[in-house]
Image (cartoon, rainbow, N blue to C red; front, side, top):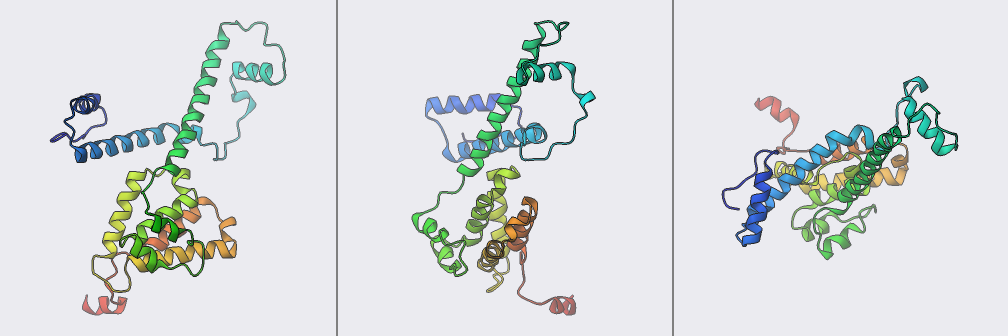
Length: 255
C-alpha cells in the first residue's frame, strides 16, 4: 500500500485498489492498517449522522399529536394490533409501500444493535496481567502503580477506556474507538510534557479511578445521568493536563 493513503471518503476505487493488492500479496501492513482505521472512522461518522436521531431507542421521544400521524400509519397500526379492518377505501397496493418502511426501520434497529455491540467488543488487547489488575478497579485499595507497570506506563489510557466501557459510555454516545484511542494517546503525551514527577499520567489515572470508586461507594452512579457520569470521568482524567509542577502564584509572579 505504499504511497496510497485515503484522503477522501468518496473514493471506492481506493478500496478496490486495496483489495487488488491483497489478492496480489503486495500489501504494506502499516498503510493498510491506517486506511482501514480511517475507513472505519468514516463509516462510523456517517452512521452516527444518519441514525442518531431516529434509531437511538434509549432517548426520550417527543410527544406526537395524533393528527400528525399519516392515515396509512394509523390504519396499519389498527389492523396489526387490534385486528380492525383497514379502511375500505384504501387500495391493497399501498400496504407493501408502508411495509417497506417498517422493514427499513427494523433493519435500522438491527444495524444499531450491531453498532452498539461493536463498541463494547472492539478495544485494546490487554495482557493477562492487565486484565487481572483491572479486576480490582472498583475497589478502594486498587493499586494504580501495579497497573501502570503491567500496562507499560499506560495506566491513564487503560483506566479511562475501561471505565467508559464499563459505564457503557462508548456505546451510549457513539464514540469511535479510533478517535478515543487517539485522544487518550494525546492525553498521556500532555501529562508527560513537563516531566512532572507528581502531576503525571499515573496521578491522573489514580484520581480517575478514585472518582469512579466514589460514584460506586456513595451510590451517586444511580443518581446521575450518563452525560454527567461522562463529564465527571472526563474531568478527572484531564484535571492536571500539561501541569508544569509549579503553583498559580509562581506563574503570576514570573508572568
